[in-house]
Amino acid sequence: MSFIDYYKILGLTKEASENDIKKAYRKLARKYHPDLNPNDKVSEKKFKEINEANEVLSNPENRKKYDQYGEHWKHAEEYEKAKQQEQYQRSYQDPTGEYSQEDFSDFFESMFGGRSSSGARGRQVKFRGQDYNAELQLDLNDVYTTHKRTLTINNKNIRITIPAGVENGQIIKIKGHGGEGINGGPNGDLFIQFSIVNHSKFKRDKDNLYTTVDLDLYKALLGGELMVDTFNGKVKLTVKPETQNGTKVKLKSKGFPKYKKENQFGDLYITYNLKLPTNLSYKEKELIKQLQTLRS
Image (cartoon, rainbow, N blue to C red; front, side, top):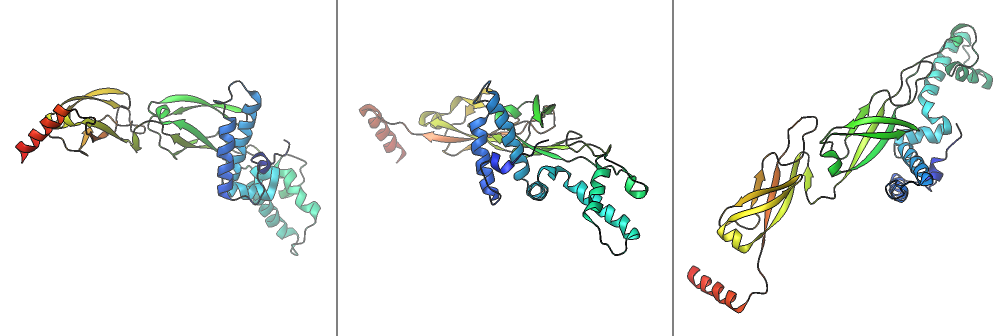
C-alpha cells in the first residue's frame, strides 16, 4: 500500500495542534460531503481520505504512532512487541546485548510471514489487528427510530444497526471489523463515535425533550385548548385559566426514545411564553382600562 500523507490531505504540517486538525477536518468534510456533491466520484474519494486522515490524526495515540512509524503506524504495537520478544530471546544468546541492523530485520520477516529461521526466531507470533475509529454524523431525526446504515471503512462496506436513542458523542463497538490480525491473530474492532446535529426546535437532554410554546393573553387568562408540536406529531393540550408566563407542563412519554429500551420514551417539557397583543384598537384599550379599574 502506498504511503498516504495525512497531514497533506488536511492541508496541515506536523506542527498542527489538535484544534487545527479539528478545524481543518470540519471545513473539508463540509466541502466534500456526499450530500453536497451527489454522484461526484472525486469528491467521494476525497471525503473518504479526509475521514481516514482525521481518524488517525485526531487520536493522540494514533498520531504518535503515525509520526514515528509512518505508513507502518497500524503495526506499531506489533513492532514493539516483536522487538521486545526478539531482545528477550537474544539475551540468552548474546549477553552483551549488541545487535546489528541485520539482526533487527529478522523479527519483521518472522512477523509478516517472510523467511523463517531455526529455533525461537522461526516461530510466528499471532497479533491482534489494529482497532479502527470512525465518526458518523447524523441528524437528530435519524436517531429517533432504529434503522440500518451502510458504512464504508477502508474500502469495505459494513452494514450496521443504529439503535434509536443514540446520544451525541456516544461510542459503540463493532467487534471484528477493525484491521486484520497478524499471523492468524484476531481482527481488531471498529469504534464508531456519533456526532448528532440538532436542527429541530427541541432541546434534548438524554431522553427528555424541551421546547417553548407561545401563549396568547386571552387563552392564558381564560384557559382553553392548544395544539402543540411534539417530535413526531401534534397533540391537543388543555391550558388552565390564569396560566402565568414561564409555566412549565410535562407531557409524559412524548420525549425521545430510551436507548435500547423498546417502546420506552422520555418526557416532553413545555414552557409557555406569554405573547401580549399589539396594535390595540381604541375600543380594546378602553376595555382594558375598564378591566384595570375593576381589578383596582
